[in-house]
Each structure stands twice: as C-alpha cells, then as structure tokens.
Image (cartoon, rainbow, N blue to C red; front, side, top):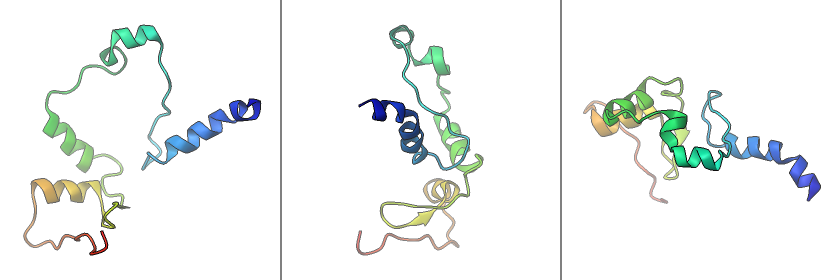
Length: 102
C-alpha cells in the first residue's frame, strides 16, 4: 500500500493527461468541506450566461481548435470543424461520415 501511495502523484498525472489535448490543462485536486459549502462560484467564478458564444469560442479560437482527433465513431475531425458542421455547415464541404462498422 505504501508503494501505491508514494506513486500516487505519477498516477494522477497519467490519468489526467488523457483528458488534455494541449499542455494548457490543469491538475485536478480535492477541495475542502468549506469550499464545498461556498460553491463552485467561489473557486471559478460565475458562469457566463452567453452559452453559445462561450461554446463557439471554445471550439473555434482556443489553441487546440484545429487539432485533429478521432471520435468513437472513427471520424477524424477538429473542434473547429465540429462547430462549423453543427452551426454553419458549408454546402461545398464534404464532411466525413461514420464508417459502417460503427
């Protein structure tokens, strides 16, 4: 048990790294009970009520907006291309479709 405890920081970094597409991510941590009662707003601020603008910014202007990834349906895409497909599809663009195996 002691060996696992000593290596927990390495495990934590490895587990969290799979959720990061770029190096700008942060390492999660547990907060205190006092933090729980203060609510998330005390730690991260109030949410932006302009949800669509925030989602667009997240998909189109962040550093990883054009970083390719492959979905569980075996479609290779980018956050920017996903935003375009859902909100402003271009009739001249041929979007990849899921394969028949999915």
